[in-house]
Image (tube, rainbow, N blue to C red; front, side, top):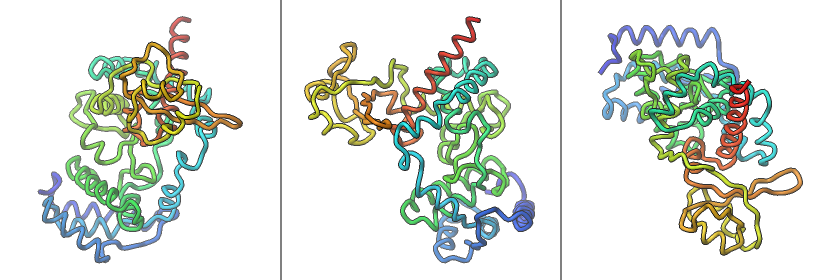
Amino acid sequence: MLPAMEQSGIRSLACRAILAAVLAFPAGCVRADYSTRAEVVDYIDGLVSEHGFHRDWLVDVFTGAEKSAEVIRKISRPAEKALAWHQYRGIFLTDKRTAGGVEFWKTHREALDAARDRYGVPAEIVVAIIGVETFYGRILGSHRVIDALATLAFDYPRRAAFFKSELTEFLLLVREEDKDPFAPVGSYAGAMGYGQFISSSYRNYAVDFDGDGRRDIWSNKTDAIGSVANYFARHGWKGEEPAAVRVEIGDDRVLELADTGLELTHTVSELRKRGAVVPNAIEDAEKAALFTMELAASREYWLARHDFYVITRYNRSAMYALAVLQLSEAIRSGFEGASRQ
């Protein structure tokens, strides 16, 4: 099925976009002509048979897609793996980012209140996600999504299967939303908009929160707010407080259970028996995980609970989840302080 326009119109649009790409060649990209590669031809065959795409349209898209060495360089060394906690935290826990979050909350209070009421996700969490991901829309990414996803699908073997799936989701997205496939820009991993949704997340969790008939996470902050809140609700946000607790270690035996993965695979009772000093208010039967966070000259230990795990569904990193939580606390404190003045 054609994406709401005649095939000739689509091809004309794609050709104009390709011409624009030639005139303004993306930095760090090389002309790849993915459309001629055997594996891409096979992939196109699959899209035609499984999803009803028009072959000529797909050939135009993959002729215009560019291979980006910068995308491969960035994804090979993400901050979550390259930095220690104290370094990573320093990127996001700043006065400027906190103040920006307070201002964003003030400006979009009505939408944030509505998202809290509908989805049960507090404003400070939604604001912190948008703050960590894009600095409240100031850093939305500079890579064409088609370039990033084509590069990672066909020139980054380690995660090719995942990004090939995301590439399919992106092509379905632009067809459903009637978008120019060369227009969306985002991160080196193909994430887009204020909340940096990958294509599958957009198709599954983005919402038209202002009721204008369009799901716009790129320029519509109300839709972005609702979409982030919906994502958390759909992943099981409970609203427990606190989502993570700093604990002391009374016996090093418990460290054998630390940093074993993001899943909540241990009970609080088990961690207590091994030597974690957990507040009495947290019940023995609760599932939890224990994480070590490296400081400049020491370590912190954090007990992660259900909502902490939910945050890691947004980004598979314990440091990311803790940064979101701590930024959200700073933003909430700043907002409440400003409200009392």
